[in-house]
Amino acid sequence: MNTKQTLKILSVAAVIFGVLTIFSGGRALFGDAQARASVGNAVSFVLWFNFLAGFVYMLTGYAVWRGLPWASGVAKALVVTTTIVAAAFGWYVVNGGAYEMRTVGALVLRLLFWVAVVMLINRVAKQA
Image (cartoon, rainbow, N blue to C red; front, side):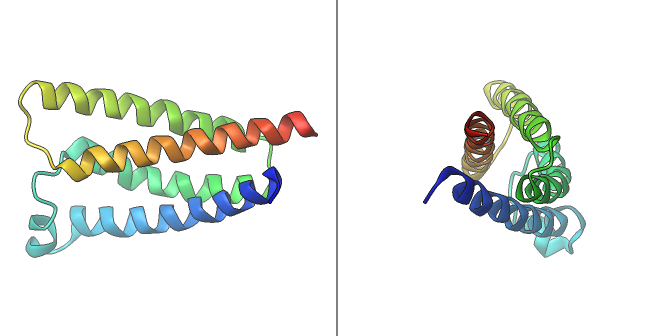
């Protein structure tokens, strides 16, 4: 599989990831009491960031699929903003804030995913 094909797969994954993020975040933010309770010690600013970022994931996935020139900038912005949120989350945890371990995993997964997308976009751009 070549780099362009891998990028297409990641673009589809980004859209799916966005839909799932919006669904799960929306349930946690706007669902009934049971749905909200199921998230445990969710950190609200991380939850809101992830929910809103889900829309950007879908848009960016579409842009990457189409090869739109601004896709790279948005993917890089996702790396930067996710890093900032992860750092703020780390600060929150170090200062004794309650959290769920799955939040750590989710932030790492999101960051690694978007770093991979940026790297592949850059590789495709160099091949062009």
